[in-house]
Every structure is written in structure tokens, then in C-alpha cells.
Length: 153
Image 1 (tube, one colour):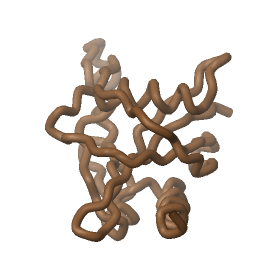
Image 2 (cartoon, helix red, strand yellow):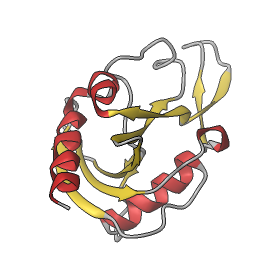
Image 3 (cartoon, rainbow, N blue to C red):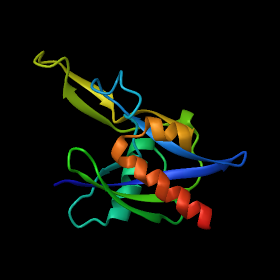
């Protein structure tokens, strides 16, 4: 089963915790919102550590490096069976600077036309209650883990 790794970026604003979530690009996700957002993540390559993959995917999907220490949040299993190993990092990101890599897909299906879409079409800072609604169901446990870590720090 494929294994992915990603980073849940967080910050504190006006006394509340906010997380950066990404909305998948492409035609399948275009009209989906609640339960469709994700942490920036992607497949772990052979001979690559999960932490290295998480940093690479963050850079590819958002267009910036995620420097600093990563805090292990453990893994979650998505409905597809894919395992996502997640890390948290405190930082900031100006959402208007989003510069995602792209992918090609035949669209519309069976048309013979190849269209290019961004992997991530938008990113937003959300407080935890909103993130619980927007985030993929399987990844919501990461919010609980982050809150626990931040509260004990």
C-alpha cells in the first residue's frame, strides 16, 4: 500500500491555534469542500525518509521550504488504505504566494485532450473547529494530536 508523508503547519493568532490546509487541484475536487482538504503531503520515494518526503512535498505543493524542526504526529490510514505519516511545524505561510506543481490528466474523460492542473489549487489558514469540518475525515485525528502537543508545550 502506498505511503505518504506531510506537514501540518500551524501558528498562533489572537490566542487561537490555526492550521494551514490545502485544497486538492484538478477536476475531481473542484466542487468539493467539506471533508476534501488535506495537509500538504505526497508519496514517500524509495530510499527516502518520511521527514525528507514531507519537506519535499511541502515545497512542491506550496512553493516554499518548511524549515525548522518537525514534530512527529504519527500516522493515519485514509479510506483508500494509504498510510499518511504526518509531522507538525510551527511557522507562517502567505497563502497568496502559493505556487504548486502541476499534473496532466485527460480531461474531459475519453476526450483525447490533456489538461494541466495544479496539485493544490488553494491553501487557507483555519482555526481548529473549521479545520475539523474541512479536513479529510481520516486526517482529523492529526488535529487532536497537534492540540495535545501544543497544550503540553
